[in-house]
Image 1: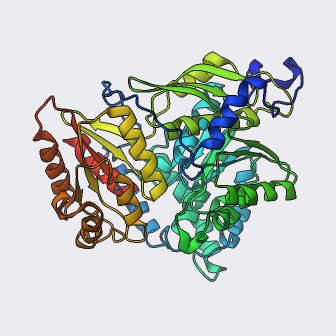
Image 2 (image 1 turned 135 degrees about the vertical axis):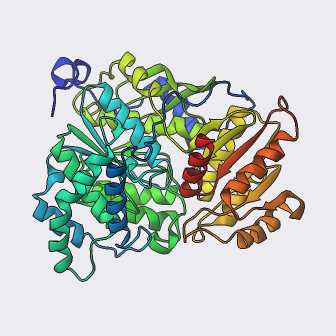
Image 3 (image 1 turned 45 degrees about the vertical axis):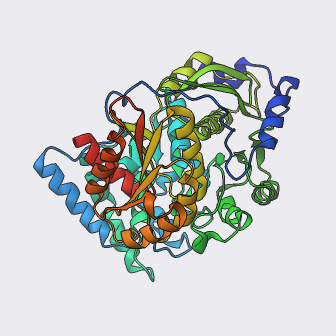
Length: 513
């Protein structure tokens, strides 16, 4: 690992127990305890602000390669990966990925890791952790899923997706070993298992000082769980993938608790009570140290600001004020508190020392964060916002965030969902804020048929508020036309949501337009 900053060097600071909440922190405890644990968001209150800043300068999402040869090589790799099991077809085991890691020389053991599970907020939290570690002069690798537009987004080095050339090179490097492992297993390695191996190999080759790894699904048998992370993060748990993970928060937590390893530090976002009990029991069983949002760390204060929000965060080592986060929604403030605590734990704050990280560095890191497809503004006049919410808890958080940050006089929804999701729950979460909803479909086989989605939408919204447009481009045009009916300065907007895939395709269409 490269040299850590002086503010996090245990030898420079007195030891102390950062997990003892101070008297000044009582307000956080009260606020966190009173929150709805299923949402893990603060009530937004009555403040609204129509955001004036445009989309961030520069796109954090890579485009297709402009070099025809590179693009052809990437498409060939994508085609080969597509012949493997998709991300929705799983066999609950880490046998295949463990076998692959073994023949690759266990690259995942070449660096310390932060492992992130949970239901909502994983990718945004991973991006924040990555930004903080990078700001403290550590070389980082980040592995997240799914991608918004380009498969190369999933593997990042130094805060940016790897190039198409490097992605292809990494795949070709591991390809001979894929064939070797495939031949010795009942089932071939899956799409996600291969990508996970590529990420771990790329991080070792870089090499990185720290890896930030998001699980694909669950935890115990997720392909990423061949790492032995010193810091495990659990973002808010709610119902999703119930056919795979269980039908209650407690059952889902049982699967996700698999990322908690012996002697690790566990950073817990606010959880439903039954989920928290499962996670805490696992931590006790493996002698892990626990830091809980609302007890040992949390959001002290937040206010809406142009282009995001201004936060005061309580970390494991002290208070951090004047932190600007260029993301919308109270849920993102809580993701920031979780990310900060995770990075403090990574540096030993709370276990070996009590002094906080350098405040200016923390501020600079958070101010640089982007999270594409998470309440992201991609167009003005009318304003079009994208959010990848695909389960009821995520939809409720997005709805509150939109109401708080934008103050739309009228909001049109564009919803394209996957057939295996709780689409009724998602639609019900958005019903109070959508004047009308345009239902559509993305281009993948998993997409719910627009007519079937419309039937559910009519039950939730009423027939007069539902428009059906099977093609996404037509749906976007219809929604923008509806928003423009109020006139240029009337304050109407459009929210595109329901699926990461829908948001990614809409993002590509709108940013090219």
